[in-house]
Image (tube, rainbow, N blue to C red; front, side, top):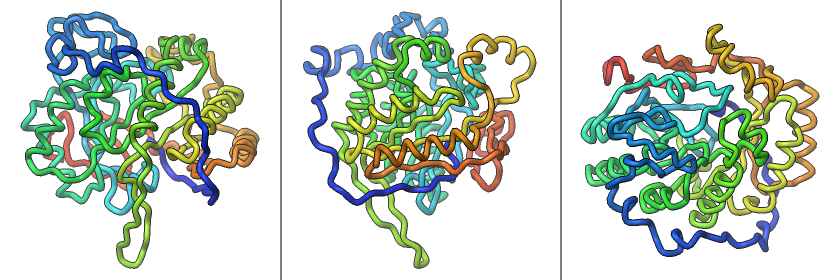
Amino acid sequence: MPQSFRTERIEEPALQGSAPLHCSASLRNGVPPPLQSGVGVYAPCVQCPRKCAADRKTARGLCGEGDALRIASACLHFGEEPPVTVFGGSGTIFFTGCTLRCAFCQNYQISQNGMGRAVDRTEFVKICRTLEDAGAENINLVTGSHAIPLIASYLKSAREDGLSIPFCWNSSAYESVETLELLEDLVSVWLPDLKTLSPELAKHLFGAENYPEAAALAVRWMIERFPLTLVQKTKDGTEKEKIERGVIVRHLFLPGRFSETADTLAWLKRYADGKALVSLMSQYTPVPFEESERVKRGAALSAIENRLVSEAEDTDLRDLIDAHDFEYLFYQELSDDTSWLPDFNRTQPFSNALAKPVWHWKTGFEV
């Protein structure tokens, strides 16, 4: 999760003349009937760009999940970008499973190792309402790409139960546009990653060579369908901006991979500047894996320099930001603090300064 940021904002006209989004025939004709109904989506499962075709009613897909919706933690989180956390914090729900297999994932316990438990519709709605009652500015849905049909159904139930705060979709962007359309009338704020535009690096680090193509299409779909809306909120004499609708595209700088970040920022300048917010993160932190995990991930991690970002790299990133002159960009201050790394075995996965838990997979609402 992002931590602390400084804001670069330049008051000038938004970028004009971006190329139009070219959709597939299936998208132009609407969402396919299996996705509309939810019938057959998991058997065989073809909803994400992997299209692994697993029968998730009886087995697990490459995402690691069956047909149940599993959650690891729910909390008020204060480490997102300022327009997301605002005053009350972001009501963050961490799902179990993931369509990617990032070798450096800080949330590997839940994204890859299966930590979490199944929740039904009633419990999911109660989690959302509990977060809202605790003061959450929004409901932040983290890494749910593998379960969009069921999540969409549960979000509708939460709205019908009276939930009024916005839904934020927080994902890797490794998603099919056809499946994302199930969320179009429910989600108003989108927080996608754009991890890399290099198929070679994506294959090595994520096990998904087609990530750049799929993610670029998904991000452009989000940007073109959800124009940016920022509003001013005031509390105790302090004024902050809140994103009510639109997209924040995130990119994590990988140590030793400056050229990939340069390519990604050039893409974002063309397609996102003036239409969405950009968040460049320098928080890369080596995860203290146990020896067995370290050995398993060793080959993949060899594609990057598995260390903290250096001061020289930080300077180069700042120069790159200045050269692109984005209208609105967040950039993290360089830090060697690693205390924010989560441990989802604990009922409080984060530090007390960063999050306030309301639900945990081991104890439910007893946190």
